[in-house]
Length: 298
Image 1 (tube, one colour):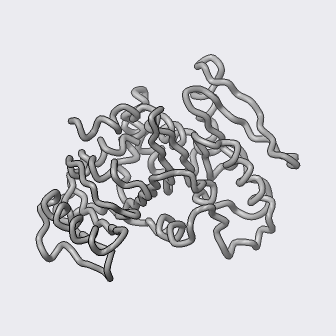
Image 2: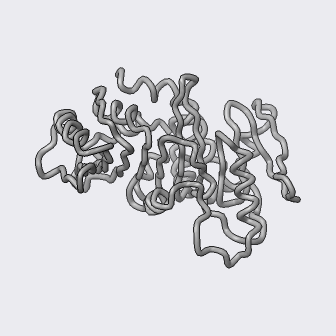
């Protein structure tokens, strides 16, 4: 399908990144000190953010494993998925393709690492030490780059050294310093992604491509940003219910955008709500799960 072309072109990179993270998260014991939250390692240089908790759709995580790694049995895929708590991911699109930055909260046995990431399979294994730090972190370079700074966190993709620098500095803080998240993201966005427990949450500050994928239409909506969530439809296990929150540049653009969205999604009056002069909420859009799996291809 034409509207899936962008995701299909780059599915291998994203799939490889998150699959290997899910397979391999966990390398060594974390340094004594403050526990680091996986979300704190995601920077503010992405245009699309997504949080995928296990409780929202464990099958999706199983598909990530079995869909990319053909040698994984169903039992192995389920075992790995059961050990993942949440995946945070930032994506960027450019004329050169799509890059990904991911951080995973999980607890995966470290003995999987040498079986998959080794020189015989084409990986370059090296040590990285942040400036003014005595700690060293193994990094693995191939089609993608990754590292496992603790048994609970895995990092992959863009700005890997920056993620390790951040981890190292946060882990050195006093253990009792757990009152706040030291995130590069806006506080509201951090809270939104962190709060994803039984739903998949996303945020896009450049949402045009995402909306084209969802609707199959080129919609010129003059948006500031859009966020939303996917939850399993309680009446149909093979479907999601999608909620969207659009922020338009002004009220004029909201009126025009609302008309286009009603046509694109086939909405009823009960599914939409206008907040103030420039915000539109749309609720309970039914999306087939298979469609979302193809869109994300994580």
